[in-house]
Image 1: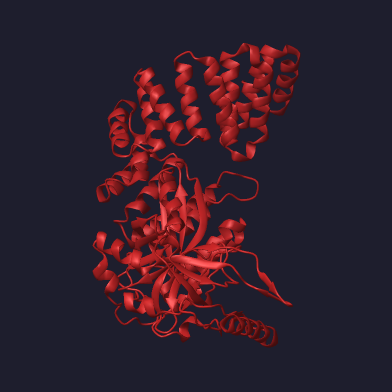
Image 2: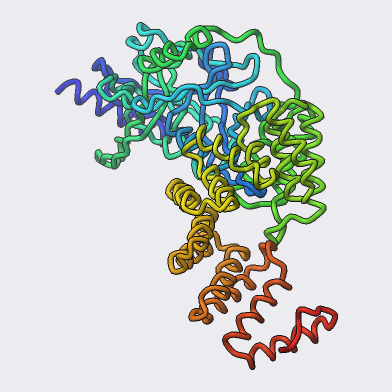
Length: 565
C-alpha cells in the first residue's frame, strides 16, 4: 500500500511539473525492480558516448521499365560498432526487400547527417521473430553507438528512445523520450524491452535506438507501440502506452550468425566534422519530403542544392536525374528539356564513378526511352560487366536483344529469379515470338500470379488472344486498362475489341474515348486515337463516322488518314 501511494504521488508530481514548466516530462512508473523514476527527456548529446549523428534515415525508390519511379515512406535506423553496420526494425525494411522483387531496380539508400549525403546499403540480416534487421553501409566509418553488454542491460532502470522519427511528415529532426524500463522478458523477442508511459512514440518511430541513458549504449531497437488509453487519476491523465523493442540478447546471435560481430564490437575512428553536412542533410531530407508532397519545384530545388553541396556524390546526381524526369503540370511525359537534364545528371554520376553499375543501368534505361538503342545497349553491357546480376541492366538488354536471342536470356533470368514477374513477362513474350503459345501462356499466368498489375494482365491477354481464347483475353485486356489507367492500355483494349469482338462496339467506343481523355500520359498519339475511333464508328454508326471524318479533315486537310468514307 505504501509503495502504491508513493508511486501515485510521484506520478502526480511529474504531471504538475510538466504543467508548470511547460516541458515534456516523462511521468514516472514503477520500474521492474520496484523503484520509481521521474525525469525529463534529455538531449542525446548530453548522454555519454551517444553521438546524434549515429541516428540516420533510410529511404526507398523503385524503378520499373520505362522510367517509372515508386517510393516508400522513409524509415529510421542507427549506426553501431565501427559505424559500417546499421540497426533497425525488420518491418522497417522487410517491405523494401519484398518490393524490390516487384520492380526492375531499386535505390535503397541511407541518408547520413554526418556526411550530409545519400548512400546505397545492403540488407545483410533479418530476424523477423525479434523484428530486427542489420544493414551494411558502404562508408569506411561513421559515428556510431556501442552495444550494451548483458550486465549493463540487466542493470538498466531507464530507457532513452532516440531517433529521427518519420511520423506524419518527412523530417530531419531528432527526438528523444526518457522512460522507466518496466519489463525485460525474452518470451516474445520483439517485445523483450518494455518502457511504459510513452507520450511521444507513434507510427514512424520504429527502428529508433533504445539507449541506456547512464552510458549511452544500445539496449535494443524500438519495434512497436502497445497503445492503451490514458488512465484518469483525479484531474490528471496518466499515459499507459508501452514502447516495446527487441533487446541486444537477440541482436548478438544474429551478428554472430552472419560473421558481423567484430564490426559490431569495434569503434569508429576519430571523426572530423564535414563541411556543410547539416545543410546537405536537410537538402536530402527535403528531397524526399517533396516526393510525398508532390512539390515539383521543391524537389528540383533540393536536388540542385544537394548536388551543389555534394558535387562528388553519385547518389546525389542520380536523385537529381529522377527529379528532372518528374512530369510538369498535367503531362505524364517528360519534355525533351527534362530528358536532357536527366541525361546530364547521369553522365555526371558516371564521371565520378565509371564503374557504378546501377548508374549505367539507369542511364541505359533513359537512352531506351530516348530511342537511342545502340547507346543503351552499350551502357547496359558495361553495367553487366561490373555487376552481372544487375536487374535493370538485364531487363534493358532483354528489350534491346533481337527476338531470337531473348528466349535463352529470359530462361536464365527466371531460373535465377523465379519470383520476378518481369522475367516471366519477358519470357512469355519471347516464347510467343517463337510460336510456343502454351508455354507462353503459362509464363504469362505466372507473372500475373506474382504481381497482378496492368502490365502483366496485358501479357496474359496477349497470350490468350494468340491461342484464340478471345473471351478470356478480352477480360484480361479490360483488367489491364482498369488497373493501369494510362492511355496506352485503354487504347490497346479498344483496339482488341474493334478487331476481335464485333458485338462489343459500344464498349470499344467507350474504351477509345477513355484513352482520348487520358492524353496527358502521352503514350499514344492523338492521330492514332482518332484513327481507331473512326474505325470503330465505321462499324457502329457510319453517319457518326462521316461526321468525325469531316471534322478531322477540316482540322488537318493534309492528313490522308483523316478521310470520309
